[in-house]
Structures are given as C-alpha cells and as structure tokens.
Length: 328
Ligand code: ADP
Ligand code: MG
Image 1 (cartoon, rainbow, N blue to C red):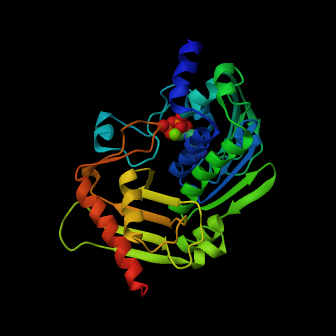
Image 2 (cartoon, helix red, strand yellow):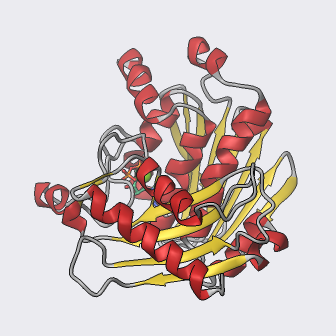
C-alpha cells in the first residue's frame, strides 16, 4: 500500500518547489494573512511553512494527513462548479507524508492550545499536544529519503532553491494583501508587507530598480469578448536592464504558464527593447471561468483558453496601450 502511495506521490510532489506550492495553497485556503516559508538546502533538507490561518482542530489532524481527505469538497457538484479554493484533491499532505518526515502543528483560534502530528514515510504517529500560536506550521524534512531514485533526481541545492523561489515569488505577487516572508538557509530572501499594493510586492520580490521601472496596466475591453479585465505591471522598455525574463502571468488569480501570454507580452514590446533585454511583467488576466481550462494537469500550470486568438490579441493590446500611455 505504501508503494502505491509513493508512486502516486510522484504525480503531485516532484521536487521541493512542488511541496512549497501545495503548502502555500493550503495556507491561502485557510485565510492566512501572513505566511512564512523557510527552507534549507534548497528545500531538500528542510521546508517549513507557517501561517496565521484558521488552523486545524486537533480532532481533524489525522484526517488532514489521510489519503483523499479534503475539507474542501462537499459533494460532486462542487467539483463541477470548479471549487473556489486552490487545492481540492485532498492528497497533498498524505502524499508529502509518504515521501518525507512531515510534521503538522496547528491551533485554531478557539483552541486553548495546539496539537501536532508526525508522518514518517507514510507511518502516521500519535497526536501530541504542542504549544503554538494560532495557525498552522507544516515542516517537511528529508524529502524523498525513502525513494532514493527520486532523491537522486533532485538537482543541486541552487537549482532547487531557484524553483522554490519562483513559486514563493509567484504567490507573493498574486497575493499582495498577504505578507509573505521567504528564508533560505537562515537568510531572508524577501518579505512582502501584505499591504495590498502590487507595486510594493514587486519592490520586495524584485527590488527597487524593477519596481520603479514598472508601468501600470489596466485594460477593460468594451466588447464582450473572452476577456473581462487585464491588470498588473510591466516594465518600461527604456529602463529594462534585465537579461532574464521575469514574466508572471495569472489567470483568474491562478499562476499559469502559457506561451501564448508570454508571446503576447514580448510582441507588445516590439523592437523597443535592446538586444538581450527582456521585459518584466506581472499580469492578471480575468476571463469568465467557463472559457478557460485550468486543469490540464494537476501538477502543471498550463491553461487552455477557448478563444486563444482573442486572449492573445487582448493581452498584446493591453500591454501596448500601457507602454504608449507612458509616453513612448
Ligand atoms: P486539500 O488542500 O486538497 O484539501 P491537503 O492534503 O492539501 O488537501 O490538505 C488536507 C486538509 O488539511 C485540508 O483540506 C485542510 O482541511 C487541512 N489543512 C492543510 N493545511 C492547512 C493549513 N495550512 N491551515 C488549515 N488547514 C489546513
Ligand atoms: Mg491542499
């Protein structure tokens, strides 16, 4: 049975970054306004995600780490309607626990004290009392220690760190109203303030040079096409010095990678960028929920739009307009 679990785990948990992604989504689902992510060794040694969300009652701790346990789907209709919460498969904690040493420590606001539960390579331990603040802390040690083939597949710490950094940055940018702190090997990587300002989140994540060169995008098409609104920040081509492309795109507030969106942004810059310079962009594309398929694959971030051409041209137009408004 544990073998089956371990194989299934590979579908959701590929590397430290995928663990961090699932844990942050759980924190957001729990209504957290502060999330602290700390990792060691690129996340291969240790991952800790702490939040101030609504917590898990002691009586539900065992359920939370059990297979197919989710508190987020009430019936099958929820699935059809596309549940509002980020995670709804009910498998993340169980699968992470199958391939690591997992500790979940939590205290709901109305509980006098907290409780913790450890899962070691799929073996669920006893529930112990734990002194902790309101909210949830999840710790993951020695990821893939019991699946050597997968462990071997992990890259150097630096590469795994880069993947985790991308994930934490994305969620920090997508949720400027949540204070997200990120630490690697005891050093702060960044910390957003959670003031709700996207520009302030960009400042924290990418630094002052980038934040100051950002131009606002706010686009609402007048016809009723497949786009409701496009908003966010893009970099001023004049001041873009980046030799790396930082493009974070979100569809209905969910981080996605779509070459379609990337292409449209790059197109909008036309020949305005110097050779070997790439735009920064943080773009939120809102479409009617029915016109996009976000569940192409549970682990991947690809999306499929019903009307690809219309989305592409709207994004190009939104960015072009913003760059023009800036007096170019
Ligand atoms: P899912 O998110 O798909 O429901 P998970 O395995 O990620 O499944 O989590 C299982 C359950 O544990 C969640 O449904 C939720 O009830 C609880 N849980 C997990 N993480 C947190 C958290 N940070 N705060 C509050 N509850 C949590
Ligand atoms: Mg989840």
